[in-house]
Image (tube, rainbow, N blue to C red; front, side, top):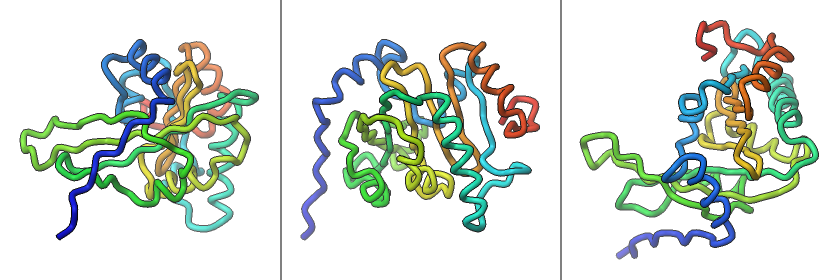
Length: 204
C-alpha cells in the first residue's frame, strides 16, 4: 500500500518575501496569469516570436524568443538580484505536486508558499498551487532552460521579480507578461519594443 504524500514544508528563509507580498496584495500570492489583470495599468505583453507565432519550431526560433525574453529581463533587472519563482500544483487531497520537470529545471527553488484555487463549485476540481523561490543575481542567459520550457508551455507559472516586488516578468507560450513600477515606465518599455506588441486592441 502506497503511503500518502506529505505536504511539503515552507522554507522559513522566504518569510520576508511573504510579508512583503502581503503588504502589496493581501492575503497571499496571485496565480501568475492574474498579474495582467491585477496590475493592468502598468502591464504590457510582448510576443516572443515574429507575427505572433506561438511556439518555436527550430533552434533559430528558440534563439529569437530567448533573445527577446533576455532583452526585457536585462532592462528590468540588470545588475540586481531577483527572485525566480516556479509553481507546481496538485489536487487538494494529493500533495504530490506536478510537474516533475519543475524540480529538474529549478532545483534551487524551495517552497515559499501555497495558494488554493477553489472557484469551481465542484470540490473535485479544486487545486493547490505550490510556489518555489530562490534569490540570485540576474545574469543574461541564467534562466534559459526555464524560459525555454515556459515558452513551450511545458512549465507554466514561472515568473521573475525584484526583491521589492515592483517588477515582474512572466513568460509563457507565445509571449510574456511584464509589469513595471509605474505606467510611465511601462509606456517607455513598450515604445522601445513596438515590433513585439500584440495587434489586439487590449494588448493581449
